[in-house]
Image (tube, rainbow, N blue to C red):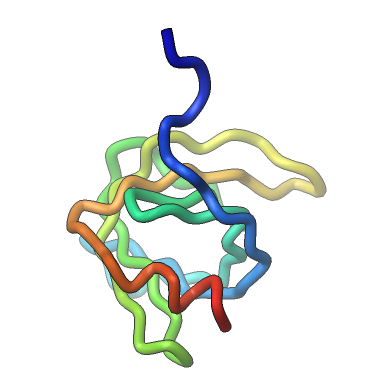
Length: 99
């Protein structure tokens, strides 16, 4: 029986933008805690509801991905840890961790 994650997640501290797909006026600068081919954990100032469609992007690397919020949990200093599941496959994730 497998415990934990089956996929490798890379820890990075890179800044990105997160916006609500259904309300583009809601946008915030976030920090990637870790990322994989299928999703990411980000640190935000705003609370995001599970199931909400979002877009995460890094303009320096020309990366933009649609995702869905899986969870939002309290983090340190009144911030939130948000789990994202990419809604499309991204083979170029390595660009985010190489930069």
